[in-house]
Image 1 (cartoon, rainbow, N blue to C red):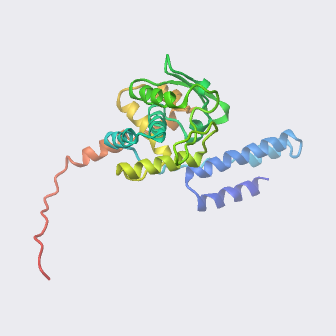
Image 2: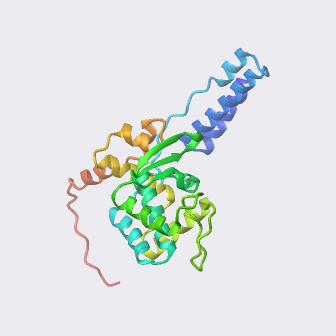
Image 3: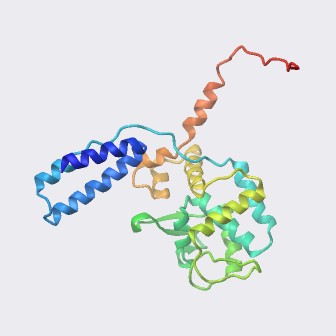
Length: 258
């Protein structure tokens, strides 16, 4: 009933950020809808209970962007590793940056999803939605080097590699992707970043280069350009530049001995 859903909304507001609260409320409305379909509640009861206002508010986006020098450092670290892991990790990093893939999308890729001749990659995203991206220049080169080592056996596109450098034809895990990125960040001297930060960087860099936001949304697998816009950090850079236009007339003190 409405008094129950309103109480749930009030409790959520005290615990979570607006975006998270609205996700919970959307799920709650879905449960109410199914209850009505199953004749557990009347249409009027459903309408009243689901009549909850979304929570307004805007929070700063999580995560960070990687700078071009950091992407270069990560790939250089892989290039200097002459083991099969070096080639595989370079392909994973290049793919996640150049195509904006999520971790679970990377591990779900099969060899048949990629066409080396055209660079076309078919991705199975959230809610089983398929989308296509195209790998070019360095991303295509990194993938070619990995495929030379992997071979043409059907199965997952990326394989685990043991300490002895032996490849195993089975699917990697999400945690394995996280671990390889953390390993490469440490060896390259790059500040910690999450796998999703590569996706954020992909969106921002495309928009910065002049790509249309609707096209970027399709490439990222976003159902709405509003979601894509939350990944755009150009506004932060503009604010940082604008802040430098003001001159604060203050000079640091000379260090004084105590």
